[in-house]
Length: 232
Image 1 (tube, rainbow, N blue to C red):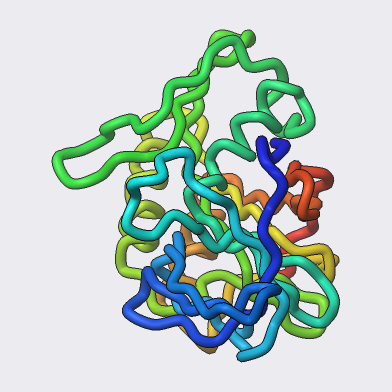
Image 2: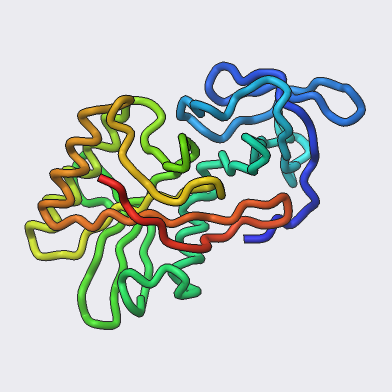
């Protein structure tokens, strides 16, 4: 996924109210921008960090600039969760993500129960159907990408839905899209959300595939690049 326009550089002042951040631009002007990430963004909010922003095509939008990435330890971290499914879909369509074999068709935002939707339903050329839930991962410590960065009851519910589908004979998987280059493996963040970590282990034992793919993040483009091993 290439950015259509050149991103706007700046430095983070602060993030607040979940979806807002103040950024100092190159001309020293401080502007309020949209922060498209509802998570805690643990480890990605140091004041003064370099950031890149995209500019909305609609000039009348209240906050025309959107926070896309932030530098952490000299590595760009993609924080826009609104792009995650697009990145994974591109990876599937381009056969970079090859865990499912050839995919004939992809359906997004699939309702699987009265209370839940999952990100994708994949029609495989083998004739099988697989359900896929995607999670954006921005936290990394000591070379390990970690999810979640805050307690997520919604994430645990998605795992329950995937286990139910696996029990019905469908393919079922959760894919963690790691949008930073300084990790060489993935693990559940048990110290942050022990329930989710336990549920992920339970899901794996119930036949849900646990996948992690790293994305290469630059100010010009973001693309899924390689699989990461899961460290239990």
